[in-house]
Image 1: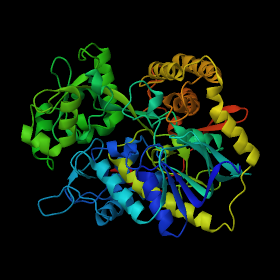
Image 2 (image 1 turned 180 degrees about the vertical axis):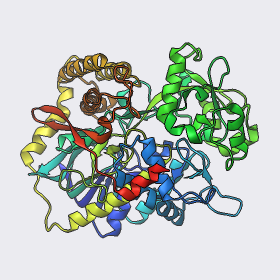
Image 3 (image 1 turned 135 degrees about the horizontal axis):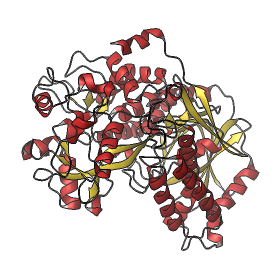
Image 4 (image 1 turned 90 degrees about the vertical axis):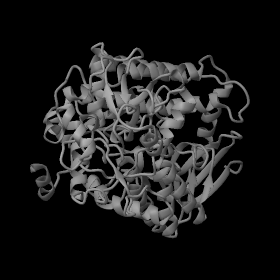
Length: 595
């Protein structure tokens, strides 16, 4: 190991999005020497793409809002499969985390009397998303990034972690490489926080950027961590399907929150035909009533265009399958006929400029063609609600890579508040754990040497192209394990994953080692295959339809499966799947669902 660049920390944070930055800030504040690793450049994390806002029951628009209502909305959105304690902590602490961001310099939109303005979003009973136009994630990253730099945290940019290292049962560090030079780099640490985000690049149509390859999920699995709810992948209902230049790019839910409506090719507002019984009492069932909601939100039931994302995505899918979709396989999202150009440009500036510049679509004059796009993983590392600790000592997880908080379906806006609530807890508890150890855990030099050789193996020659393997995986997952699933198709996917894994062993990359995207993809493919297998095996195990998991062969919701998490574990013998009981909610919280 003498030839390998080595760094030593109390706490190592992998991922520099909202969760990773908040964890690093908290860890550093407690006196732990903290290192922060970015796969890309600092400030380029996928959090910047979060547009609509941060969900927090601050009561600035509706005084009736409180943490109990937010908790209930979150649990109902997740179809009661959420870890109830995580959902409770999230609802209780989110307002303080928003105020903290404001104290650190975040500039939120304001009400007429100067308070933080909050907007409507799908699945939320009241308007509770604190926002900065439609670029809230960018403001969050700007604020957290400046605060982290101010604290003097060491940041390693364009560095990709390939393996977590262990000393016996506990984490001891991580091995990675510099994307610029290809040289190996070793990080020794007493505790590691994984905050690597999502896995959307497993699917062919996704809102995720190139970083979303599921590396954190795979790193944790390979280190022995339990994974839960991997079958639940959220397909955001409104990703652009046309023109090709913007295919998959997200259209924020704020478009519908500010007046946009979904229509089929006949011009029908079809969402009135898809209101589920659970939401019927609070959802408008006529266009006139929905229109009143836009003008007088206190006295009218909310529009069905703002049902939870899984409900809207399935409705769009049904309209397209029934032949009522747009020419390019989506539906229309129209805000131009409801709001003035001035209003749209003021409330949704990024949406307006993005689609005008990238696609020549003027959303102030014409509807958008939208459809479901792979967006968010509800499943991930199983963590303790109080501490964000995984089942591996010294390993913590926060943000999208952690499972449990969102159950079977995440409500819009809950992701950004999830990042800061549990990012803070992960950083705090990782620091406390690390500061309680007298010395760094050991690192196995033989393991480092062996893994370094494996990382470089694609340069030794082979016949498989990493881009071909990736495309085949994406197509397979989108067709066989996408928004609608059956056991026979998912078993085909498992066979394909096995085939791709065998071919990956013979992958070849060409060119220099410096900034070689083919090599980077070849290494990411190992992670994506682990993640794809975990999603597929968990989806086969859950024989029902719930939230982000819809099965044509089991279309109903099962009472038995409503009581369990599907747990995935990767062991030397292979990937195993079990069903384990959900934590039991206390009676005082159960009463919230009797209203």
